[in-house]
Structures are given as C-alpha cells and as structure tokens.
Length: 362
Length: 214
Image (cartoon, rainbow over all chains, first blue to last red; front, top):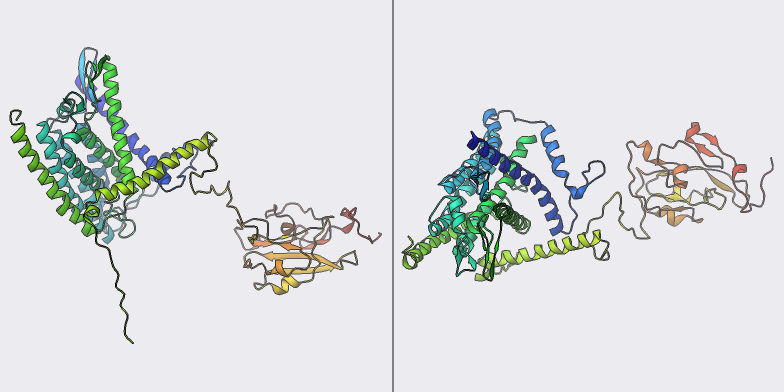
C-alpha cells in the first residue's frame, strides 16, 4: 500500500512537472524565436492588465484549444481519428516513467528512488514507447482521409524508422561502456571520476555517439530542421484534419518528445542527476571536501537534472530556429548514409577499445 | 535567334562544409549572438539603461506609432482662421482637380467681402479618396492639408467613411458625432442637413472689417 502510494506520488510529480514544462515550452518557443529574430514575441494576452511577458498565452492557447469545434472529416475512420492523438500523447508521457530524475531520497527510514518505475531494461522500454508513439502520427495521417495527411503520415513513418535505427545504435555504445540498460544504474556509474577530477559522463566516453544521438533525436521530435511530417509550407502535415484539443495533443506531443529527448540526452550523456564531484556524503573537490545532508544532496541532484534538461531544451530550440528544413532526399541521405554508418562504426570502435584496453572490466 | 543558356555555377561544398556540424555551429553562433544581445538589451531597457540601442525591430502598434515622414499624406484636415472659421474660400479647385471625385463642396456667402465665399458643406469620401494630395497642392489658400498623421481610417459602413466639415475641421472627431461645435453657418447632419450656426457666435476679435449688424 505504502509502496503504491509512493509510486503514485512520484508519478504525479513527474506528470505535473513534465506537462507544465511542456506548456512553458510554448512560451519559451515564442520568446526565444522572437529574440533570435529581433522581435518581441507574443505579449498581448493579459489577466487584469497583467501581461507577465506573454506567459498567459499558454493559458489562452489551452482555452482556445478546448473550446474550439472538434471536427471529424466525413469519411474518416472515426475511432482511429480519435485514437491517434491519444496514442501520441499517451506514449510520449508514459516514457517518462523510466527516467531517474534524482538520487535516492532517504525519508522516514526508507529509501525512495526518484524514478517512477525502476525497470532494468529502462532504455529498451523508452525506445519502445517512443516507437509506439509514432503510431499515433501515422494513424492520424491515415485516419483523416486526406491526401496531404497521408503524405505527412508516410513521411513521418519513413523519417522515424530511419532515424530510430541510428538512435538505437548510437545508444549501444553507451550501453557497452557502462554495461547496463538500467538507467538509474547507468547514471550512478557516470558519477565516477577519471583521474579523480573529470566526471565520467557519457559525453566524455562517447562523444561521437552523442552527436549522432542528438541529431537522430531531433529527427524523432519532428521539429525543424526535421519537420518534414508537418512541413507547413508544402504538405501541411499529418494533422491537417485535426482541430481543437486533438490538434493540441499532437502539438503537445512535439514538446513532450523534445523534453523526453532532452531527458534522455541528459541521462545518457550528461550524467543524469549527477553533480560533478558530489557524492552521497558530500562534495569531493580535487582541492578539498565539503559534507552535505541527504536532502541537500537530493535537491542538488534534482536541480542538476532539471537544469541540464532545460539547457538541452534551450539548445534544441535554438537549433530549431537556426536551421532550415532538410529536403526529403537530404534527410534520407543523412540518416542512412551519414548517421547510420557513423553509429555502427562507433559501436565497432567502442567494442574493440573496450576489449583491447579494458578487458578486465568486461 | 540563338537561345542563350545561362550557366549557373553552384559552388561545390568543401569537405569542411560537408561535415554539417561546423556549419551548424556557425549558424548557431549567429542566432546565439542575436539571442543574448537582445536578451541583454531587453533587461537593460527594463532597468532604464541603453535605451538608444533597440532590442527589437518591433513597433507596438496601437500604443506606439511608426514615425511618419513630414511629407507623408495622411487623413485630410481643413485649416482654420484665427476666429475658428475654415480658411477655405470655396473656390472649388480641389473638387475640380480631384481625380477620384471624392470632394463635395457647397459654397456659401461669407460676411467679409474680402473673403467672398466659404464652404457650407465640405465632404470628403475617404472610401473613394486615393490620397494623391492634389487637393493640397492646388489649394491657393492653404486651406486643406494632409498632415494629421491619422492612418487608421476604418469604418463599418461606407457612410462612416464620408467625412464632413465637422471631422475635417477637427481631426480628433470620430463618427458618429454627437455634438456640433461649429459656430458658422453650415449644413449639419445633426439637424438633418439643415443650416446650423451663425457668424455672430464666432470670435471676431482677430478683426474682420465689416461685421454685418443685426
């Protein structure tokens, strides 16, 4: 009973945090793009005259989405049409369950892992959820009975499948280095130090895998420069026939996936909740030590994780507003001729290096 | 005739450019520079500093108007004499020159024989006006100008686009007019197109030589 309650509380925290951050993301997107393009950005929505730099636009968006007419086109498959956005959002949200967002918290004599479910194949689980999430997009395209939507759905399918391969293979390198697919264990192993002062994060061990992962992950989020499934200017995307909150769910999925990918990049390559030189009993600087209490340790860990995720979201957003969209053949060429061989090569090199130099650990 | 073919030289990408990542970083450098520069300037503006450096190209329209050139042709106005009557002498030149035929003038007799005429009625249909400015150029009395700086000429009906002498003499007025404040005789919509006002109500201290006695 107690176990279930704790899990529910953790799930609520993650759900609340992620959804709020996704909503906040709309504001970040508006303002960041505005600053990049020398504009001011949406700032007109106000409550009692308070504008708060346009923060209320997210609320205005939500109200608009919920009150708009929900149209199902004649001839569309009604069940699938309703199901598609649900699948999309559901699997994007569910994937967050396996992300460890803080070090173990000691509370009232018991140790709580700050992770909704501690699956030993957490990485596989997350990739599975992301893959199933693609179904939402494809179904949305097919169920709409609209040529443009089908085109968008097909493009999404081809893009996701080609990039998921590179994504998965890039991650294999990380799995080989740390020898685990359990994300909380993986994060713990990233807390070690090389030579006592460089944190042994994934980016240090697998820089090539990181670049491939980030590129493929950006393609997974279906945002520019990989926004071919939506491609507003040419095919209008798989959600042409969606309106109201069903469109909003697809929209939300984009942001959720961006956050998901940022979480994954943090967990795999930037030490998750690890703070450099911070261990469970305190800081171990190369020049001295500083003891901290457990709750400070946990707080610092959660903050470290959130800040890393936010920085990743910020950088992804910056990339989204810097690069123009790829052409379709360029997209496929990059995926199959660029990322795929690089990631395979990375796996091979990693394997050889591990066997030759670190064979006693494996 | 021999068809000319144009050879377009598309430069081959160098290896460095084909790597994508250095070029992406170059692009990111530009966007990051804009982002942090503008962020810094926005914060500085909040603190009242560095206001001479603009943080954005945006003009917050209804509150903040775009600066107009002094020769810009905006909504018309009729200039006034010192006593508050229109300078217009009803010579009909502007009505004649108007290429869009949007000006309607009905002249009346002015009490001052040096002035001779004045407009009883002066209408401009802004729905028809092409803002060419000929009326301003042709006026011998400098009685009509297009320097109000009013750009937001918008209305829900064609009738509301038709300015009469009230709005032309006072650019602040917007239809529908509730009150007529013109002191000289003119055709007033508020009295269903009948004449309203009288010359005696004007301030004659500026000195009109022959004020008609009652």
